[in-house]
Image (cartoon, rainbow, N blue to C red):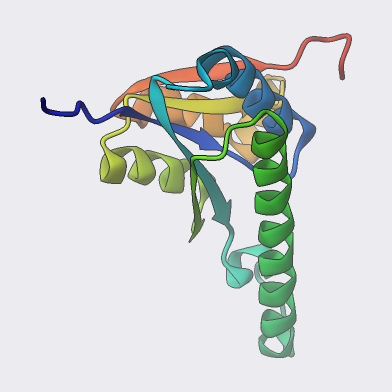
Length: 161
């Protein structure tokens, strides 16, 4: 009898409470109740901004700062992934794949969807207003328009903020 390969669910994770809530909500609704045989293969994706984009247009001496910034970004990424894996373990979801990719989160998530032929992408919503979205950009908005799969945007209830 041929085994059917599970569909892939990509969940974008970062160091925000909104991201943690989205992951927890996803685990509770798609994995915990199907613990013995989940419907999806879970892929957690974290995007690390490049050190040069984090430093921006700095003046003389910027090159000296880049290795320090890069090291800090990697430490943050490690912490984000460890916390996400701990949350998965606490929900008894242990079959988790993790990817940490350098780049803009919007592009990294859409590329992960393509690479893994994901059926669904889950992202948290930071709840930005119109002006903040214009200035900062919205990962969830970008992904909802550019990812080649269904996109679920998980909003944190107001009483939790």
